[in-house]
Image (cartoon, rainbow, N blue to C red; front, side, top):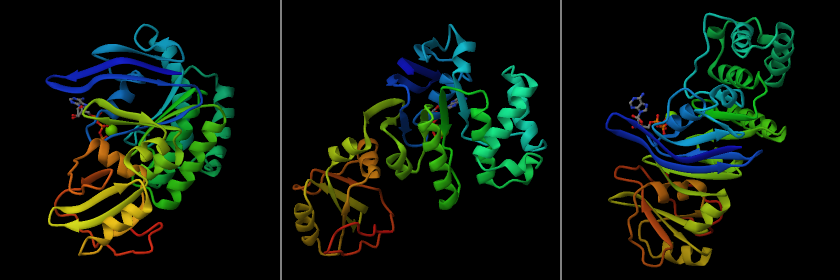
Amino acid sequence: MIRIENLRKTYGKIQALCGIDLHVPAGELFAYLGPNGAGKTTSIRILTGLTRLSAGAAALNGHDIAAQSTAAKRQCGLVPQHVNLDSELTVGENLDLHGRLFGMPAATRRQRIAELLAYVELGDRVHSLVKQLSGGLKRRVMIARALLHNPRILFLDEPTVGLDPAIRRRIWSLIKQIQQQGTTIFLTTHYIEEAEFLADRVAFLDSGRIVAVDSPTALMAGVGHWAVDWVSDAGLQSAYFPSREAAQAAGAARHNGFTLRRVNLEDAFLTLTGKKVATDANAQTVHGQGHGAHAAATRNPTGGQAKKGH
Ligand SMILES: Nc1ncnc2c1ncn2[C@@H]1O[C@H](COP(=O)(O)OP(=O)(O)OP(=O)(O)O)[C@@H](O)[C@H]1O
Ligand SMILES: [Mg+2]
């Protein structure tokens, strides 16, 4: 459904994308993760026709984004990273404008707007001015807008940024529902647990290059199964082990306490895109999260889903 071959983008001397190859099959919920400046938004802007690629090729549902740009654009809807609704217009007017841009007839527009606002639970806000909505409601309006023309692919660029945990979870279930109705979803987020919960597969992007692509489970298993966190002069450190026993033994050897817990996708993310410091010979992988991390490493000899240091 999304095919990307050797995609490159340069902005002057900045190489934002250094040759991306990716295939996302129909119906998949794919998470595209990476640190700030990794090239996530640039990739999405190229795929949705907002920015030109410098080299390489990409196609959406078989339509080349350069040679068949209009057909390719029809395949996708976009929820951009920054809110770009017209705040002086109402919710309904914003959606209607989008429908007109896609050449939808008036009756179809009216029907789809009503359907989609009901779907994102904003049926009673059609006449509200966008500037009077909270951040979470605006995000839901943007999701409704992106779905208005029935796209096969939905690009979501940090759809839950800045939202409280309850609203974030409502948007998660909305994203799952959209996937269940057959839409292919391409998601970026800095909330790694969001990708762990939602995604069928995950790509880690770093400095314009893909460093890993796999299911969340496989990426986590590549790091280890159990983690030990502790605080040293260098900040919060973590080491990963294949078994709980090995992790427990390594933690017990530390004098200032430790936290024992299961490996999560954030560990895989930090290991594959961050700094590694090899300080524990028995660990499968070790990394530090930099100086100055305030980590009250909690001794937790019983293990299990332990509290993380904070
Ligand atoms: N219009 C532009 N002009 C010049 N450089 C740009 C432009 N847009 C992006 N860049 C640069 O390209 C690189 C990738 O940026 P991009 O916005 O794709 O990152 P990102 O992964 O989305 O980051 P974030 O997580 O902060 O949103 C960065 O170095 C950025 O400064
Ligand atoms: Mg971005």
